[in-house]
Image 1: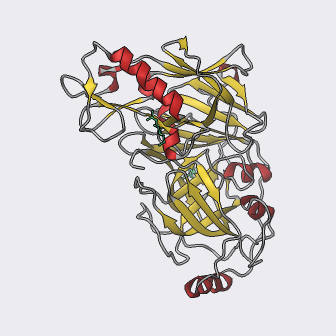
Image 2: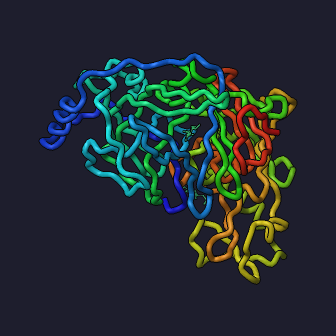
Length: 423
Ligand SMILES: *[C@@H]1O[C@H](CO)[C@@H](O)[C@H](O)[C@H]1NC(C)=O
Ligand SMILES: *[C@@H]1O[C@H](CO)[C@@H](O)[C@H](O)[C@H]1NC(C)=O
């Protein structure tokens, strides 16, 4: 998909058969040889948060990334933070069968393999989990944009600085990905930082080691960059609009069903099942709502000095003005705000506002393009995905302890300093 990446996990195939061909069985032997023995983990029982600066942007990069320092001695890697999937993996020299170009040299795994019986391994394999090779945990993840990674789980040290000033080096499980298929939209990245709810997620592992609370959040700046955090002491909860996580979609970060609001008015499009997913660059609506949005928008635009730019294939729907546009500010007056209204909020109603700057981009040709896409077209007919574009300039918090999702407008340009509360 040329329209940006979409890391929502569509498939986890496990009980992966590595012994189906000669080269595969060599690979397996190699793993046996490479990984023998293991070490115990160190634990520091501290309650605090971790804040990471983010780089990247929605357009033209199409993704945000965080630097993590992993291994002994620690080496830097750029990972794409994904609240839509659990597993963290790095492109890995195992050796690599197929890796995509990356900003850093491939990760070299140590010899500490996660065994097949490990509950964390079982959590990655839905249904009956067979251990063809008990000494290792194979994984395969596939994302909605067609990208995928095949590898084996290893344990290694992650360096973390808590906001309290304490430095931690927990030993965590992560994927050594030795066979990656790139998605149609190319993104130079060392790996994915899985921040979902599942047991293999980094945030779940840190909680299980009692290092931080089971809370993750991000603040993506519309000017690029921003910050990511683990734990709950970097925001003032009383300013946040909270809504309960849906029990019907318990594997994803979903506040349940919403009504689509256009220009402040009810649209009658209710029961949109919404998922918040930092692994998706753009926002996706199901085909019907997307169709309706396009027609409301076209109605609003009649008589305005904008015409469809059919020669611009940056995104499916682009418009040109009399002169090329430089910034969203030049055009936002022609567009209405959109919102998602959740009736099950703790206040009377929790509304997630999507102003024009959170659903439009200015393409390199100076046209304005709609960053809300047809989810049905990418195989997500049942979910409406709130992607990076619509989460810009807000703190979005996924609190797995209280089982709530929250958001509030914020300045994401600078990470909060230690011991200071933002807002
Ligand atoms: C942690 O802090 C130290 C110095 O206090 C710094 O050198 C290091 O880069 C920081 N690590 C991370 C992962 O932010
Ligand atoms: C959305 O995609 C589906 C599947 O490709 C297609 O049938 C439908 O016409 C599309 N809707 C719009 C409004 O483009």
